[in-house]
Every structure is written in C-alpha cells, then in structure tokens.
Length: 189
Image (spheres, rainbow, N blue to C red):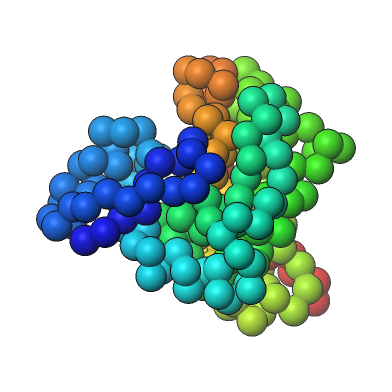
C-alpha cells in the first residue's frame, strides 16, 4: 500500500507498507497520530479530497506563524484522510485552518498554553445539515462522523503541520478530550 508521508517537506513523499497493522505501528512510532488508529492516507484518498474542493496540491492555505511553515492543501488533505474525513468534509477542514491561520486568531497562543486550551470549531450554515452534523444531542460527544472527523483532522494538522505535540509546543499540564476532536454544529434552529 502506498501512503503519503513526510509532513515537513514542501511536497509529500510516499511510503510503501503492505500490512495495514504495520501502517498503524509506523505512524504511531513516527508520532504522526494522536494515539488512535488512522485511515492510511493513500494518494487516491488524498487526491479525492483535493478534487472535491478543486484545490491544487500546492495551494497555500496559510503560513504557520512561529516556524513559518507553508500549510498546503495536500498536507491538510493527508491529515483529513488520516482522521477519517470523507472528501465532502474536507472544505470545512480547509475553512477552519484558514481561520486559525489568520493573525487575529493567535493560533500559537491557543496551542502552546499551559492551561490546556484546545481549538473549538463551530460549524454553522447549510453545510452542517448537508454533512449530517447533529447539534441537538450529545453535542460534545460522538454525535456524528463529520463532527468527530473534522475536529480530529484539525488536531492532526496541529500535530503534524504545526508541530503542536504534548510536552513540546503544547505545554498544557492537563489535557482533555477536546484535544482529540473539538468540533460542533451550531443549533441555528
């Protein structure tokens, strides 16, 4: 199985692993996961996300402010696939990261605090119902696939693209489950 890797490079490299168990173990050993299993980011799955949005792989979503790392559509798509996102979830992930990379958001402060803060993504508008996001019950729990996967994709991007890892940039003494996935739909009704 061919898998997209190398998060720090400008263009992603490929890794050949035939055993799905070894994919999980390799990603864990490299620190590319949050401790949960991932969907192997094959070139086909990454390309499907890019095609859904019409973004080229090298499209610049933004620049990480501390290390000046380019955050490209391909890198975000790799992490979205790993989180379990479907291509139709990908535009929300891109939108969330675009907002987070705006200077007014101060992403470094939110991700390097010792207080345990986590980025909360709130989705409103018609997209929430199109994706089947549930804003009525168990909102901060396991209500639907879209909320969980989109929130986890943002977190994996923070880990792999922003290098926000516990004990390094992430200096929080106490974490919480929002540091795995923290995405909800607004109950507009």
